[in-house]
Length: 335
Ligand code: TRP
Image (cartoon, rainbow, N blue to C red; front, side, top):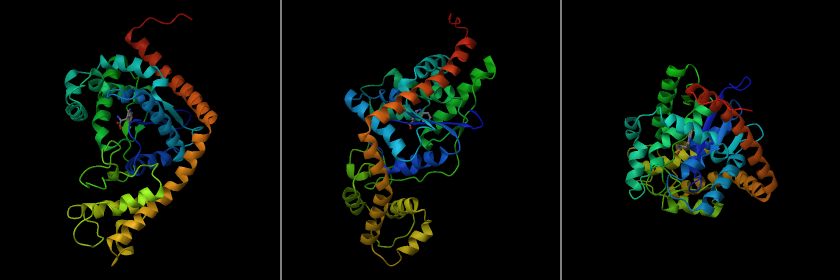
């Protein structure tokens, strides 16, 4: 708890450009939750270097991501939007937690297996201990809840195991975080292959709508979206995955149920439907684009947010770190 609010932690990687899938699946929920919880939303740049990055590109993407958090509607005066690398306690706690995590546990992580298959030439130790750094992120802020996608649930489960293990040895040091299982975000699939999730690392730019895409691009991508052979606009993931994905998207941006969407487009063709989806998506992204452009032009304001929120993150994370250091037996600092 901070004041009378429960604490929420989540983070996103600054690699690739955020997609409509990230927005409807996560960011939109983050905005809603930011009213209710004391939120720490991190740009997890430390995690990003487990895969090789171009330094200038990483720096730019990290800043853009932070601005997108704000442009999407998260108030940076009330919530802590910060770079993970600006709070050194993340690395320090991660080391300590490494010593409370078993190789066997990390070996079981499916994301590690997937990523090492994908980057066979760079299976570094950071890729292996990635989940421990994630545990440090969460535990440093004594987070009560963590909204994550399904792919991160295994890491959250590990975080809870590590925290319980530590607490059972040293007493109640860490809050045990719960996954946030409230209103689930929409699950948006690739526009080119609806059996895959829409991903910011997809090599085909037509597969994803990026939050920075302009209206023409958005409409063009929806026009090209994969559909199915019969022409009915009906929600049926099994037999009509492409159309179902478009219904999911349209429903999410207009807050309509699948039945309402089906009704609205009864007797209409795919062409009309795709155009409507494209326009609806462009409409909700319009204010985000305007705000993003304003923020991009206001360097001083963003710098101030980065400084103040970095300090806030540093303050709270160090508080936990000092407690942990004392518990494990490190000598006290002489002031
Ligand atoms: N690993 C997460 C992802 O790739 C990002 C992340 C890092 C995170 N630390 C976190 C998410 C802590 C939630 C809580 O999506």
